[in-house]
Image 1 (cartoon, rainbow, N blue to C red):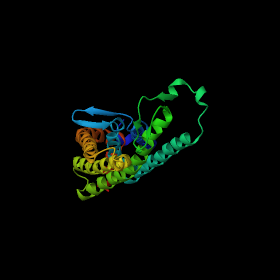
Image 2 (tube, rainbow, N blue to C red):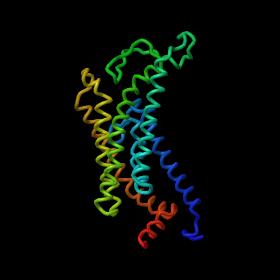
Image 3 (cartoon, helix red, strand yellow):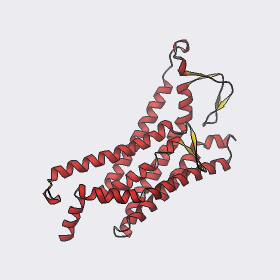
Image 4 (spheres, helix red, strand yellow):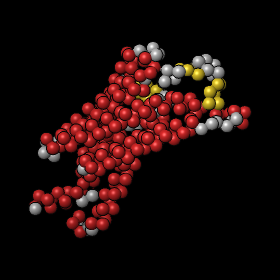
Length: 258
């Protein structure tokens, strides 16, 4: 069966399935950032990274693919859905922290941690003796979720805007330029925002130096920079495969004939 013989209903179903898959990876990577966030830092070569950052560059690949295949409106819609999910996650965390805990004597043993020394938290406070596991996770991630929400709004909308601005300026040519140009700028916005907001209270309290913070910003940005450069051949392959599969090349040919 030729591409022209494929019915509109089949093409529409393909487009919705591919969009759902890309949006699913986007939202999953974004949610991972909020769930595991800064619960652990890992050493990746010279870079020190929060584990939540590892999957985050995938969000920009998905955004650029949807921008290229479906247009700016769909990309912005997906980013907006992600923002709503951020509020949902923060709301559930707040609710879990606000509700009264059960009697400590009846709690499962893994829900309470016995500490041998004071433990500093990202909000500038500290805990000692024993602490509920959820309380520790909430204190460690709630501020990071807010920071990621702010960084998310700024970076993702910047990415979509720049992608289409470069596409317009280049007449739809040079996919590598709009893919890398939009991502590199938006990743810088994301790295600076999320690290400075997350550790702002600790910095003001004197618990962390600006040198350390700048090192974290640089590490996060370098990781995202290398990820953006590495996904350039991937986006070319995916676009070349998906455009005919979704019937988008046929539509373009029709427009050129018309």
